Length: 174
Image 1 (cartoon, helix red, strand yellow):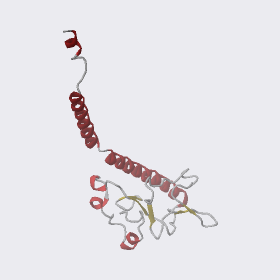
Image 2 (cartoon, rainbow, N blue to C red; image 1 turned 180 degrees about the vertical axis):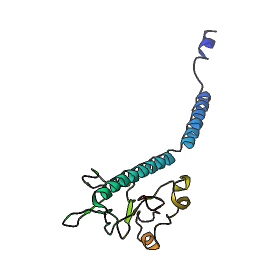
Image 3 (tube, rainbow, N blue to C red; image 1 turned 90 degrees about the vertical axis):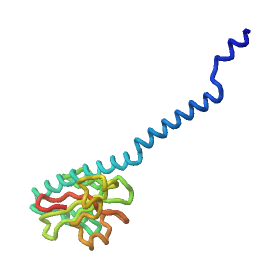
């Protein structure tokens, strides 16, 4: 009779496997519901929008000081007014307007700055990862219509990327 008392003190192997299985199913369901990859893409897109807004404010300050927007270099970096004609790259310093010009958080993807020939207006573009989900993205996630076919062929937002989100000077629409 003493043996019978100790038989029910632990879990059986079957009970442990069932409990682990249920926990595994719950964990997988939670991961699928949260979709961490999509959350990282959303966070990067929020950063891209914030970066463009920050650059936009700096461009407006530059315009107030110079009565024109800066010219662009061949690779869509800023051209600053220096005697040597050097260009500021994404991630470089643009004093006094910005300590660092933001750059896209994804390697191989970049922002595109395209001023008008008169330097009185500009377009600033990014490639959103989840543009089809964003109501403010251009043309349901496709190329912004303000980008000419010539600019599209130069891949201003990076090889294989569409410039599908843009901001601009107040007098034009991206």
